[in-house]
Length: 288
Length: 314
Image (cartoon, rainbow over all chains, first blue to last red; front, side, top):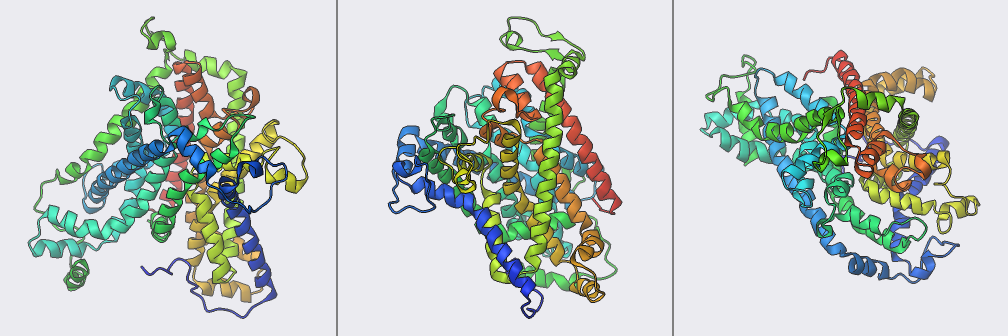
């Protein structure tokens, strides 16, 4: 997979027409409009306090400062919440990747009874509104003694990211030729050796693409954190901490924007790193 | 190592080979592989769904949770209470209409931009793709805070740009919904755009050129050539959008501060949360959850039928 794959022009470049210039102007305008909220977030996070509370906001700043970031990290123990969020999202990503890989292998490489039924069940499971289950999950976590722990966030998100991960990985596992498995068998490789040393590395790009979704949905989680981490604020995650700054009428916008930046950047980095695989992976998921 | 194996494996493939070769392993192997997934899904998805259904038939409030009063079976009591409640009916209607507005706008924006992308050179395309990826990747919570700030009556740039003075977007019901809609479209059109763009690229260019040579207009080409070929892709993005927009929670909760003034911006998901966790009416909250579940299940079944009709092999 070459780096330019997603954006490469496949057709020969046609001679310029006035229509295309107009289209390109519109494209650039739209791109600027779409990027504007993120630009404004970063800009406001860097503006000194006086400029943010100004009724004549300017789209630039001449004296960027890190005050807002400092305030966020000092007042709110943001560092700790950042680490909490990372632990939860990281655990979910790793566990769901492994579990989904095994399950996707089972449903693509084997024929067995109830296989189609299972696939349909995975598809239906994807549609279950996570939020509707907050109530029973709350009691489940309470009975398991997991309330106020990070585990109460890891487990539900693991369950919610699995169906989509399995469904998406199917395409990637399918793409590995079966002859490969036969060859490995002829060469005397055991099944588990084939699974982990041959199939796993080949499916890895797909796993990474799939992980973005588990990562984002877990990283974004707001409802479960709000419902399950009631009394122990040391276990809070980023969205909760961010909303502490978010009060009607007396918002510390600099702090909110700095916190939002801290929360957005890891996802952005992750996304940009895997975007090619993401797009081709989605193509695969759509076509299969 | 792996690439060598791929090459070595090529000659093995012969036309006579049966698709599934007999295996040494027992028929239980796939189930062994499925075991962790099924355990997690069973315990944390299927069981909670069952519990949700169960609680929705009970009178379950703070008194029962604390053990002060025994739980009593209500039959369909929670459901009749719900549908007799004018606020619930209003929230249900608002949810359906709002989700529909979000889906239609997202699809319209996503599809038009996908078409636009096919008509420009690489650099503008790259820039729009990057901007869209940024919007796509932005967490719902931060997207919401940023958009509220952009439209802030005192310090936001949008009111200033549009000369709206200190007009408060979150004060009125429709302007608040409009603000949330903008945010939702902003963060969900990229999925549609990227997927549909990939779909259009997969259409043989001869087809489009032939249509253009025959003098078909752009709209006509889209309607008669592109759209039919893209149907499977469009089905996927439409259904995904319906599902996402119907269970919106974070945006409404953050942007309208828990459902708006006097609950004017409540949608089902937020309403269920408020009922259950703010007023401890877990039975009622669960009943709302079940209603949502059933509606989404219906959407999913339509999706499955559409996929089946396209001859999708599972």
